[in-house]
Amino acid sequence: MSEKGVSKGKGPLKSAEKGGGGDFALMAMVLALSLFGMVMIYSASNYSAQREYGDPFLFVKKQLPGFSLGVLLMLFLWRYPYRKLARFRYVFLAVSLICLCLVFVPGIGIETFGSKRWIGFSAVSFQPSEIAKFAFILFSAYYMAENRERMRTLKGILPVILAGGVICLLIILEPNMSITVCVGLLMLGMLFVGGCRLKHFAIIMVPALALIPILIIIEPYRLMRLSAFLDPWSSPRNEGYQLIQSLYGLGGGGLFGVGLFNSRQKFDFLPFSESDFIFSIIGEELGLFGCLLLICAFIFYIYRGIKIAVNADTLFGCYLASGITMIVAIQVIINIAVVTGSIPPTGLPLPFISYGGSSLMVFMGASGVLLNISRRDSL
Image 1 (cartoon, rainbow, N blue to C red):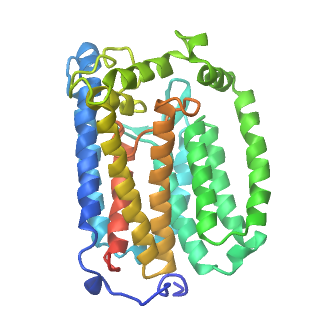
Image 2: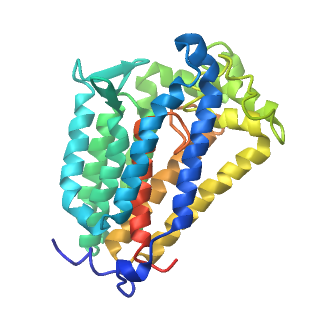
């Protein structure tokens, strides 16, 4: 393996021993967010789980394996030298692409609400797009570190665009526009930190911006969602229903909320209250101050991630930490913007909080990589 991007950084090279045990404040925040998510998943789902399955803890029990595996993965990657991950960049990228293709295979792919986003093997299922996001980060981080000068040329950035473009294509075919947008924004962010020139950004952005209205037009439900965003009261029982109920929840919480476990919107009023719209339940039960506290927790995570990237002892570590921090920031911003009616509604989980074992496990594992990178710097 070349040492150009993996062993030479922007400052003095620090060993793991000199870097200490890592950013324990970040680890504590990851655990706190994940445990808080478990509490809120129970609060948001206990009524529907009891009514439909006879077990108010059903969704928490389903989330528990993801949390347990996530903790183990985070602890492993905290200690596993992050530089060695570069050896598996093609493996992870190839596996993620294969899994994204398998969602379309009958008997393997699982279809829910008209979308094929999951793969199921016996009693185990996971969402390949969650893995694909971080496989792309690993691939592009190593490539950019090894080709720092080439990143300032149009030809040099093509491998990053190709990898991100193929992932976006497979995800939009599911269809899953929200994750497609996340990966697209992630790709642009990685190109930016990798040194892509502004004129090359312009070349990328023109077709990307032109593609967005085309994607909306070819799927009627996307046009309906856009219309509901502009005026949810034009279809209060159809496309506008979810946004209206979300706003009811946030507005009903006031400053201090109605109290933990006392949400009214969870009584079958707000769809996907335990997953994509869990922030609305948090706002209803814990109020504006509870929401602000959660946002501050995410800001702390993002701040620590940026600091780890800036102080990383290698370019590869810098780009890897940047990518992980970016995808968390992107999903947090989009999820909260959707729930508050700031952008058109789309399905996207809130990192560490929303129901979804594969999402939680992968985000906790990625946080373990951040912790490993932080062991080599002085925070």
